[in-house]
Length: 422
Image (cartoon, rainbow, N blue to C red; front, top):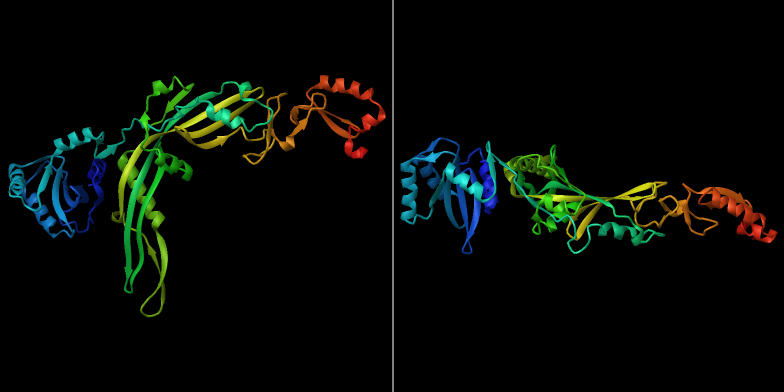
């Protein structure tokens, strides 16, 4: 039942869900299809046996007739084994007689052919993820280093033409985009106290270990670009990036589905307060059953994580983001960050110190007295003149200014501390 639910969902059937196992009445999986504009229900019986005989097909035919659906209905029996001749003859007779509830038979060989056609790898009753699609790791209309050049435009005292080529690497990280419906009604003696009717879509990192839901802006990046993917050709991307790494999916599609159902169970579990017929207030914990949650799709794709590192004299500046062509979400911005304190972000003014290569905030940037250029407090040589600290690139500049200061008239010396002179 688990594997067939995933297979049918990948085949494009709608509203695929498992029937209530406590009383399935010959129904294991229920789904819908639209043919010539008409919606039709499909009731599926699953058998993991060597052979399936006529009684199973007959039982399903009766179950279709009693299934509550406002519209056309048909059936399907799926087995990993094979069907007996009487079972095939019974299904054929329904088709030939234009029975309102025809039944299609799928045996193990049919299943393998279907899996091959839609790119599924059936292994020990589970669906392995086979994916060679990725979001585009860079904007094809711009240079791969363009995001770094753009980030440095905000930095004072450095021109793009002066930047060295950054080291560029890309890691293709597997993610899955999950879409699921939750429909549950909770009743007590006073009637319905809580109802859930929700469609949820989220994206999760799908590497080894427990899946982790990505941040909202990264999830949006994936879902908005999911249908504009390209082939993951590591050799081709190796011509663009210095390093290329490809991670692998850590679990099967079936396991991601089970994890998603558990997560949604926890997400939708809530406690409601209601008043009983006796005017007493009660608390009820409403937790949806697994059968209340129907996973509609699990779409795998590789999410490029691009990392640039730029070496400027004594410092290295990382810039990391998730990419989807011209769109990206920044994960780490080491360019808009002071190397001398924790100040970071785009609201501060950052200045490049050409003396040591530091990028610093306004609190850690001074004006070099002799050259009149920015210098950071981390590398500057200092000395007090007229009771005011002056900053110099090096001892040589300091010594040159000492001589200049000694030759100044008194009023010029005083102006080295304008506040004191005032």
